[in-house]
Length: 394
Image 1: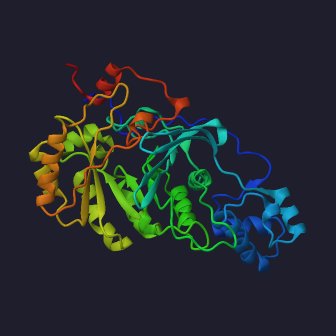
Image 2: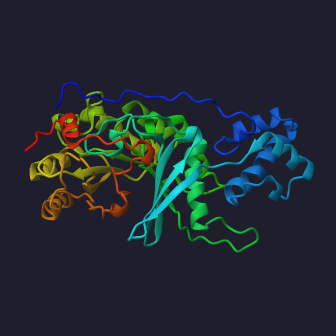
Image 3: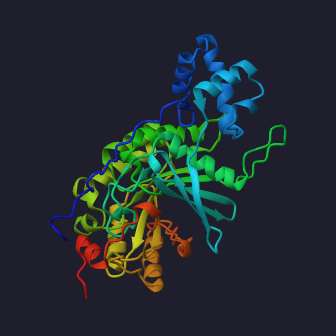
């Protein structure tokens, strides 16, 4: 591996002014919304009730127009319109894969763009949400990781992706209609662009909104946060969010993981596993998902499989085997189907679930590790990417 390869990329933060004018209510916690209403002149004794009313309109019914919030007095609605807005990210484009996967390019404040993916499956629908513009990590197999971090998303921009997808799916319930428990968008995975635990507070606040019983009403068991291994924030995730946890593991030795997931140089496999062993107890999650991308000749041997089983001993776990999703300039190749099945068989015989993820949306570059916003898509040559990844060119 190149000695100069960073653990995280240099952060390129583009300065931007906070938008002047009305405050966006989307993404505010209940307490923050209450404080904003009091500052706008709502009597403190009424503020909690007003938050409850507005909250339901925004997050339960998907209403963005204050005039449509009919249980509020007309004068109060007029006052809200002067001080506040209800806005979500703008859809720039939508692509639909042959398998039904939808990839959205959405624009956020400052003109930046991120990608969001909706994956329909039998009995469920999963939305893959982004938490940063670009990514601060430099995982060598990940297309998103070749794009430098621009900035963290706000809580409103994160939960706004969920609201945008519900708009597109036509899934907001109708007021007065019988309750329909069928969910087209039933699960959220924080597996899009960015490292969620490097944007902890905004991710936490957005997911609290998603889980709120008077709003979108998703169970914490239907939300999965994926981290590359930001060890200090794992305990906070258990305590303050309590969702399911997935870990981008991908290797069974520090030598290989240092190259694939360079954050391993800061918190190695042993430190990461120590943090993971306590997570299910604190958060009451059933088990941790270990994500393992299958790279030909790099991490896919029988020895790797047996070593993985030993490493996770004592951790309630399942192992998600991910066939590598290739992208232009990628320095690796996907393991063969036979190799992946042999690897999975060793794990399964050791008593762990080892599903092989079916690649989705590959034809529209929407599969795991392929996301990279169009406006930030400056290509590196294959030679440059291979050099950074420490892969010898044949």
